Length: 494
Image (cartoon, rainbow, N blue to C red; front, side, top):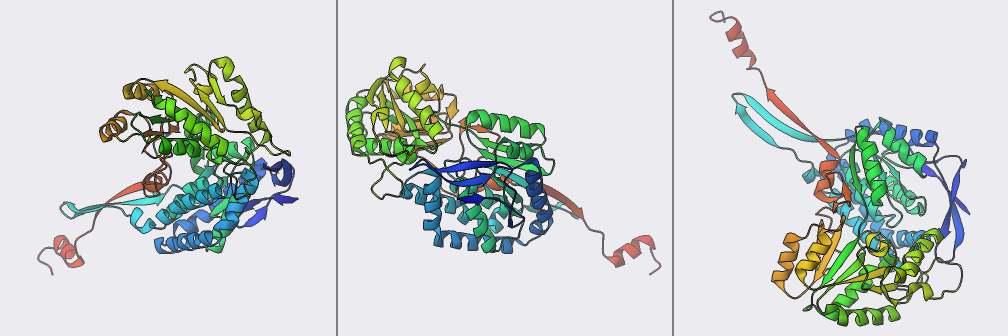
């Protein structure tokens, strides 16, 4: 059984005073243990990042870009190995894991263009002999706190941009699947990143609190649930840090009567049950407008019947297990309680039988879900799709805008006017038109509205370069040439 250690100043670090088990979700067996950081471990990681900052901050933009280009090349070469690590600890099927790596690589590619992204502005002769220019400089040591559901993609969303901007990083991954972060640190080291620029600190609240409270950490990036995101935002901001904290979601997918039902059903199944629903962009509520639900429900049910649920390493599996037994029990509680809250249970995932001790659960489909129910209100983060029926597009927009979350939303229709109206009026940060999971490409930025984001900067893309830098404006006037100065001081004596 391997012991996974921190990576501090380019080397494995830490004594196993406290450890946590890492499971194979497909078998339920403990496969590794990870060291949980003490306060002194956290202090060492932060100190390493602080010590490496002056050297990396003064490294030329060209050399920083070279490191990122090499890291992208190495990650591309080793993406199958990295995907296998994800599947072994998270449980998602290999195709989902490979897709995660690909989406993370998009941001490494974007960050590699840092010479363009870090350009300042210049205006000459603002006043007689006076010029003004601005530069973008790193904020300092950055704490990156990432979730279990995307152990490669989300770290790459943060650290690639942070490093490109000249910052140093302490990455605190989820203790449920930490091996991928160690892998990333080794790849960046192989790409030429100096020791101490990227440090990996494993742990729980002890590690997180150290990052939030340390005066040497200038900025914090976080992705996780809304209650934790809000808490992190408040605590870090109170300590004078720059913060971006991405929270939870309750993503809706609207289907109009004119939509292609087969396409909409395919999209609903992949978006609701892919990665076992453990995605902040997963569709968890399907809003059927008018008679759309009467055709859509049986189409989705048929596809659930054909969905193969099994070990993520099996190429035939379309959905893997949940990440832990505790999370499976939590999801099950919503499924078993749905009928008592007034929902119609079309497919009951709790009744599907699986061999062995893996953390599997079946896909669940619920119809006529009451808006006051916990099933509708809460972020379940599992393979549960709730269907809500409304009469009109306006009703659908009103329903979604009343929801406290505003991460992602989608509409399926053939009507361009309806799609434009939806895009214009919906109060959600990321919108898909006939696209069920509208995650922006790397050259844009990712982030929601309302309780899905605390802070004013979205993650990765252009907004990340704003978040990870501080602007400095320089106003300059140079003295006259030496001869002119002499003439001014001693007129007529030269």
